[in-house]
Image (cartoon, rainbow, N blue to C red; front, top):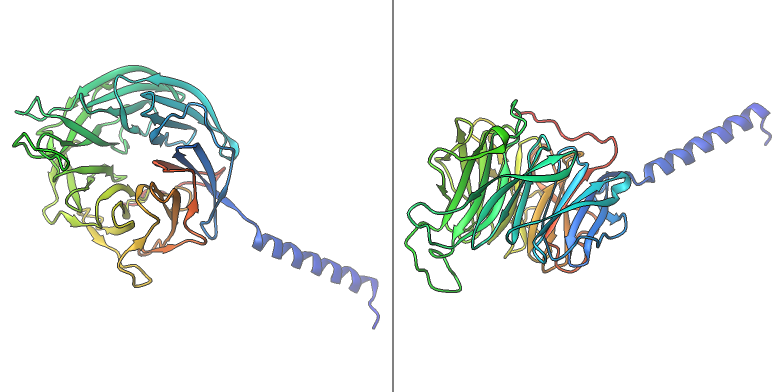
Length: 401
């Protein structure tokens, strides 16, 4: 059988298009970079857009890493901050192309760091240290560089000033208003004198608390009305919704998620239908950038609890796993959790005892989770924190309350 030249050209072109289509279909497209702080340093992984699977990214960063405990990033994803308990420092890294980190500057703290948060405008870094004493400190930020201390607040229980307060988490309101320094910041802590599982309680104070502060001119911290607020027994993590209407806190000791409504921009009031059941020993919490779903990492039973949020009231409702399983199983002891900001389609946990990251696909219509391909993904020993940043021009999810 013979072909004309025109037929041959058409055949070659068709074959070329077919091959190109197949290559495109098989192409690995990175939508996010995941930074994991572990005993070996800050490890970088790339997230595949289709499967959510992780693969190794830029080389491990060891400079400035000394027993890391927490990480956070600016909302433009250009800067990463790492807190080290080994030398009581916070280290600033610039986030470059392909997720490459470059160490920029370092500050030394007055105590042991526990958690970090940056306001939406990228003008303030909030650090909690403790215990003995437990302190919230605000530092100025300029183009990512950590500047001077602008404010601090000691965390003490009213009427129990000598009790030992153990801080656990910090979160800043989404800051959609005109005040570029933010509007309010919240810190979770528990009174070790009133709740001491390994020792003897010496105080009759309520054990769990949320401290709220209004952020004023120049970054000044003023206690919110009626702050601090009771928060169960041992609050462990805190997050706020993207619309500045709700605060959510996990209670490690009571296996509960506590919800608060924000009144007058900063004052907290319990959700009347809470608290809400979690797995065993909830250790970390995250909310997707659309404000539709909350995910809680449960350290003891190695799982993730998923909740859909009622837009009007902020009430969390447990999401049924599509596989029919009662829980979304992770590797051992998840201590950090995040939703990918590029597509809002994947949830990742850092598993301390498993020395790994577990991945889930997120159903955008229901919030249900499905384990991603080849999860869990091995990391360095005992990861303590993770941060996810979008790759390149991938836009983040819009807030649609």
